[in-house]
Amino acid sequence: MNSVLKKNDLIHGGLDMKKEKLNKFSIRKLSVGAASVLVGVALAGGATTAFASEPSTPQPSVSQTEKSSVVVFKTADNKLVGYTVVKGAPTEANVKADVPDGYKLAPKFSAKQVGTDEKPEYEVAVVEKSLVEKVQEERINRAGLSYEDITKKHDAKVKFDEAHAAVKPAKDALDEANEAMATANTEVEVAKAKLALYKELLAKNPKAHVDGEVATAQEDYVKAVKAQLTQSFATAKAKADFVTAVRKEAEAKAAYEKLGGQLADLSAYNTLEEIADKMDKAKADVAKAKKEVEDAKSALVQAKVKVAEKTDPVELIMAKFELEDATTVLNNALAKYNSYVARLNTLKTYFDEVHKTALVSTKTVTPSATETPVAEAAEVAFSGVAKTFVKGHPNYAVAMMDANGVYTGKFLKQGSRFKVFGKKTIKGRVCYRLGTQSQWVPAEFLVF
Image (tube, rainbow, N blue to C red; front, side, top):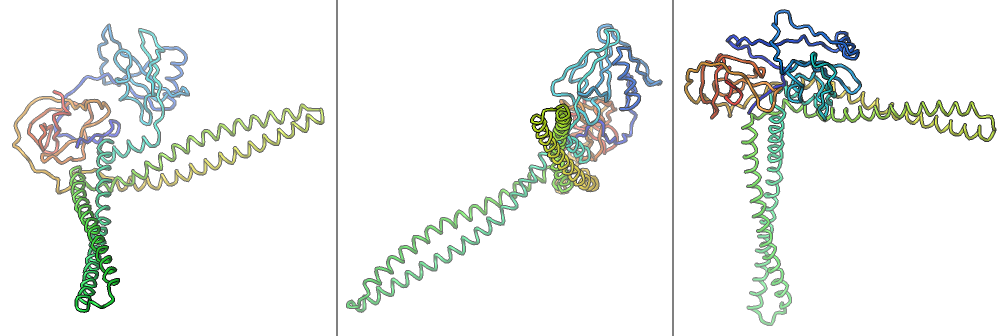
């Protein structure tokens, strides 16, 4: 299970070695506030914006063919929310990791150049993430699993719960079928005995008038045998269904436990995500209703002006009708807006309550005791320097394992360099030791 965290919420494991020193071009990041406004004013005025670097950080040598560009992140309403610095012209790939928390790149990436060739500056559009996306990210950060792993684990838990729940009704159906089979067997025996009795009576007394009773008993016996045969098929199917249910439960349990089991600590976030989805929709409803209120107010003002301008009695009456209609529309719009706001506030109360529960209950997920492996092979000495890397996910961090392959809950910032001291195979994966025996990283997340 490859566990990852978002880069801005990393938990560092405190490695027992010194990181290799790297020369980095460091830009002092501005938070949204007075400093950001100053940057925005400078950009809006077309002036060259000066960004201060950390005093202790040396400036890099800028090549003649590829200069460093300042990339400013702005919302649709031209709000400055942050910036980064990249080599050359910005691309979706090289700015995505530095988008401010709570935002994401706009659906269609575009970099608007606002600076000169000597002082390259660009504007990139960002949008605020939905509350659902923020909840998902928090769950990833607190649970120590990627969203894909959480989804896999949740799906496995759902399948196990469904399989487990299916066993009891299958067992009840089998018990019912067995009882019905017993009843059918009894009815066959009774019909058979009754038919034999009449036949014996008729054999002993040929003149007895029981021909009709014999025929009826014969029909009852045939009917009972048919019912017995039908029930035997139903009982066999019920037994097969029960065996299948038990097998599926065992398979689902094994698959769930293989992923770590015990997903109860994430249940609060499942509920939180549902509430967040309702809140996102409620926010959209509030925004739409607010626009309707503003339009209704404008229409009411126009209707009042129209009444004031009318002198003709007939036209005045019609204008007053329009004024009355405009007032009704505004009142309805206000009522609708207030109801949406009230619903949003109620959802926010629910969200806050569940969020508190999620923050208290969520803990790092580790494999269950039955899945805890043992050390598989002897460590081989290894010397080198490696950089953490997750292909296709530049904003993920890398989870560390101990010598037995159990995730420790500690994570490494992607792109960091570390000395490597040992190598061995753990749970079938080649891993490297970056420090103590609790600081192993799979080879697929390292670049030498």
